[in-house]
Image (cartoon, rainbow, N blue to C red; front, side, top):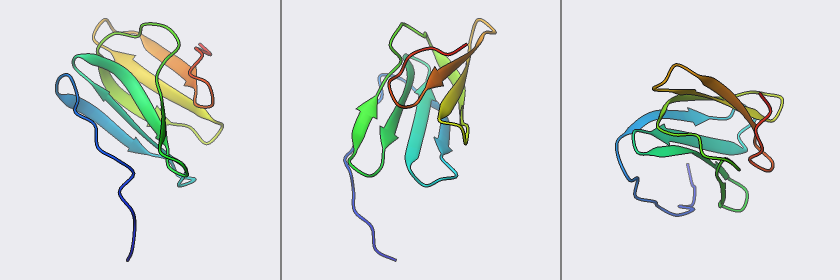
Length: 88
């Protein structure tokens, strides 16, 4: 199986969650010292939340173009994958 490396990034802390989109178009990560970030696999472009999200405990990509994140303070936030704006 062939593939290409889109790039590497160092996280500012431990990675707590990683999610691969069921559509094969996105990869998301969340960690102890950074908010979630996600990559558009077609071009390697990275997106981060449009507002501070804090330490991220887990991430989940939805089939509707959303990303759900959980945080140390017990909150759950939902982001639009396309532009990083908070949906809920």
